[in-house]
Length: 180
Image (cartoon, rainbow, N blue to C red; front, top):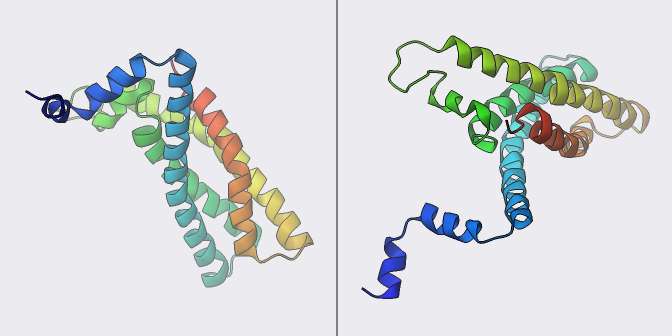
């Protein structure tokens, strides 16, 4: 068997494991953080779409005040982001059992109360930290950018999302989805 044939039969997971186990811990941690940051931003991109669509519908379609529309749109994005962060960005962290649909075992017919509570506690932590920060940060910056500087509400909202995302990543990584 040639070296190429043996390599092609090696699974991607085996290659990644073999590669990363030889790396110093700081490099592995940095690599994991960069990958998690990319996942965070991929989920966040979906959240941005949710937030901007909700904002446009509420502000332009339903004529809701731009600050109220902003708060509601941010909460819609927070809920979207939590769902995907738990299942994608931080799927390897303690509540990973939640990936099985909140059941103790994939074949269980009923949701597990323990896992449901764990997920609800996480959701509360996510909402009370990144959710509140996002809503407060978005409203404050929107007030300044739209109400003070008279920037278009849509452009101002994109700026506020980017500004809040860095702190939200750190809070999510270190507190909401912390390693046990």
